[in-house]
Image 1 (cartoon, rainbow over the protein chains, first blue to last red):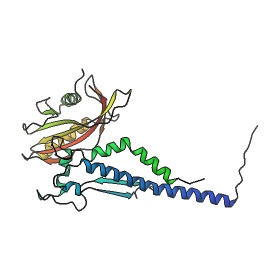
Image 2 (image 1 turned 180 degrees about the vertical axis):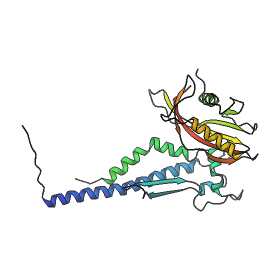
Image 3 (image 1 turned 135 degrees about the vertical axis):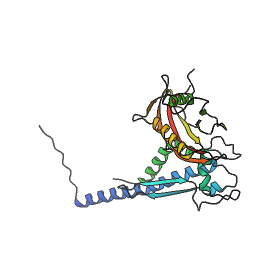
Length: 150
Length: 130
């Protein structure tokens, strides 16, 4: 015994369905870039609250960058948050660029800073991954597909 | 009460002949002025505990200091390799094991005020609290 089900679509309906899928995919790609950017901005903001501040040279060197990966298929965005950018400003007290001492400051767990602390980048990144990542994904996925009807 | 985690890591490194011993050339949460060549272990912020899970994710920084850059680099790399396992499980002592996540390979951190070079890396360890 065998049952069969048949679906009939007109060519027009099929084309409409494909178009709706393409719009949904484009929106998700755009949402991915927005989500990556939002994550970088949030991590950077938290990091700037924790970075030691004396001359604020290190803080001035903070940056983020979002770019599309061209070494993988599809729309994959990569976010980089770091220090030693923004022209790598020079510390007016030591004459050294931020990039020359940022690692030492980040990894010096013994140092006592009047403002800020070590691990000023690692801690915000790990906290974000642990507690906020899924919220960001959900928010931008929901926004990307809002009003979509397939 | 169980040994502190950092002590168990020192004992493990001692068992694989990478350090002489706790307080000799391996120091926990403390940076001595001498000797020049030391292995420094410090615990820093881990992740929040999860209810009903006795394992917590802890963070440890490992630094190697030496007058000679290559000595520091090579020893840091040896310690990194000793903490690597295909299963991520490391049996530090007969009473403690942990899941070790090597967060990055060893890198040069700084040259200190006495011209000694420090190489180091960080690990996450899922293990019990003492």
